Each structure stands twice: as structure tokens, then as C-alpha cells.
Length: 412
Ligand code: HEM
Image (cartoon, rainbow, N blue to C red; front, side, top):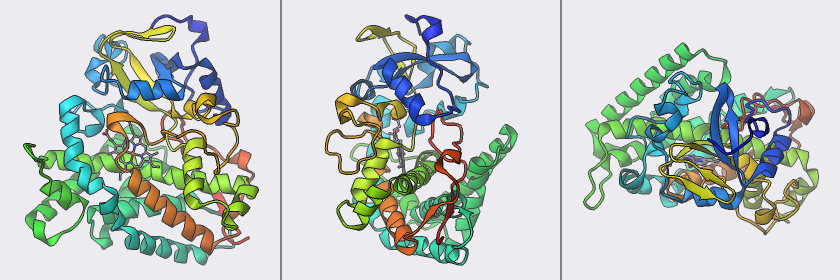
């Protein structure tokens, strides 16, 4: 990454004091700015809406990390802490480009489709009711809504989606929980991933043994065929199961938490929602704009020199899409970007991404958030924060936008 004075290069701080202010500072540097990441790693970031859309839809920017010059020349080593978000295996759709990526998307289009996930509605309703019933008994004491509810429902829904036997839902949740909740050391992480890999390998073997007996995402993947398309291999199915949890779980947790938080901090909008002047869909979409589940996605890599306005992204440079900064885009949303306004009509967020990698899980995330939030507030209409909002702490915010804990009182 060249063309900038080092002193002026903004740092993508995983622990900013004020996330909204950090986003605004980055937006002000835009539309495309050089940035520094932890470990002294240099990249570019798109921080304006139009620039992000342009790069996300431009085949000169690819996901294949082998194109990253600083990795190839050893400037960035394999043990850089964020290396884990890049995919080198050549079978995970998140890291594929061009024709192999299109093949994966076509073969998974049906299992991800809105029509297919709509069939989960009664299951999501039941799962949500069960968790709410359990919380009811503790509604008068402060509790961590993330740990007790917003983390648990989506992992259970993924279990249901995958066709995991009900008695194993907890096992799946327990395998994933330490990855999110504890400062687990890297060795333990590897061990957990190995266990999860093993679990999905066994699940696939069980489904494969009698494909006609099952009707779920895993079986859909195993059965997937397309015209002139090589069907998914067993390895591709397992990697897809692993990746979907990584891509779709924490993001959904964050969406649910961020909507609850936005409503508790904006009582006037909450009152309008209750009065029927706003819909849940408007509230969810504005939350996706105002406080998106991902702060940033690492990386695209330039396969040739790409001039963008006053700067040129050189072949081999890494590019971050900064979804957090994009929320501040005046051209897209108007001057009131800092305001949480579910009735806004100007602008369309791209928090589910854009272009060929656009999130295929958006229908499920929207369906689930709609059900879970309606039911949560119907059961606990007076839900409120148990601590002042300024005391809420974020997990490392470089990529995902997660709260550490979300202490609330359900029935004050
Ligand atoms: C990709 C956001 C929920 C599965 C993406 C991308 C974004 C995103 C921004 C694009 C990444 C990129 O450009 O590199 C979100 C948000 C969610 C959410 C904000 C929740 C509110 C889900 C769910 C699932 C899912 C529930 C699965 C059931 C995926 C997959 C990809 C992806 C498989 C990779 C697509 C590809 O590379 O072609 N998501 N996601 N996501 N998401 Fe989601």
C-alpha cells in the first residue's frame, strides 16, 4: 500500500473507545483510504457506500489470499492473528472467485432460498418460546441477554436447519460457545475446531446413510445437483456447514442484540413501533444500517493496479470493506446519518454485502430476527438495560460488531 504519508494512516483499532466516532473518522478519510491493522499490517479500506459497492462488484478484486503481495513476500506471516479469517483451502465459497465460486453459489442457492428457510418458521417460533419460558422464571433479576438468549436461539436454529437431532442441540451450542465467550487460547481454539469438524463429518455420514429419510440443509447440500455442474463433494459439504456457522451465527446474534439496544435507547421510536406507526421490518433494516453486525470484512486483493479517484490500489494490495464507516455515508443516506430513524426512505444499506459474495443467509437472518424480536418484546414489553448504555463493552471490533455482555432486566 503506497501513496500516503504514514503519519496520516488511520489505525483500524479493534478496541475503539467510541465505535460510532471511529466510524465517522474513517468515513471522513474516504472514499478509499490506506489503513493500518494490528501487527502493522497495511491495507486499503473502502469507507464510502459507492466505493464499497464498486469494489465488491469488480472482478479485479478477488478473495483468494494467494494474491496478497505482503503475504507472498513474507511481510505478513502465517501467525498474524487475523489470518484465520482468510481461506486458503480452495473449497470454501467465502474464499473462492470466478467460476468455482459461481458453481458453489448455484449448488447452494436452493437450500439458502427464502422459500426453503420459510419452512423453519414454526421451528424458530417453538425454539424462541422455549427459551423465553426458561427466562420467565428469572425475569426479575438482571441477566445477560446475549448469553442466555440471543446467543442460544441462533445456534439452535442452525442445528434445526442442519437437521441435527434435537438432543444434540446443546452439544452444538456448547462446542461453539467457548469460541465466542471466553478468551480461549489459540491451542484450545484449534482443538474445538477439530471437534466441530469431527461432529459435522459424522453428521454428514449419518445423513448420507439414508438420504431419503431426511429433509434438511445438510441433505439438500448432499443432494445438490446443477445442470452440467459437478455435485458438491463430501468435503465441500462439511466445509460449507462449518463456514455457515462462522458466517451466520455471530452476525445474527449481533443483529438481535443491536435491535434490542437501539429500541431501548430510542424510546420514541419504540413507542412508534408499539403504536403500529413503524413495522418490525423497518426497525430491523434501520438497525442493519445504523449499527451493522459486521464492522468490516477482510479482504479483497487487487489482481491489477486499480485507480480509484485520487489513489491507485496496486496489484497485490489488500482491501477492507468497512461496513461501519459506510453507515455514515451522507450521499447515500442524507445528512442525518447519526440518527436512528426506521422511517428513513433515503438510501439502501449493504450490510449483507454486495456483488457475487452477497450474503445468501439474509432471508434466514431476517426471518429469525423478525420472529425472535417480536416474541421477546411481546413477552417482556418493559425490558430495559440493567446498566447505563455507556457501560456496554464491545468484543474486539475489527471484524464483527459484538457486545461482550448485554445485561438487561426483563421485567423490572
Ligand atoms: C456472506 C453479512 C447472516 C451465510 C456474507 C457477507 C456479508 C454477510 C457482509 C459478504 C462477505 C464478503 O463480501 O466477503 C451477514 C449479516 C448477517 C448474516 C449482517 C446477519 C444479520 C448469515 C446467515 C447465514 C449466512 C444467517 C447462513 C445461514 C453467509 C455465507 C456467506 C455470507 C455462506 C458467504 C457467501 C459467499 O462468499 O459467496 N454475510 N450475514 N449469513 N453469509 Fe452472511
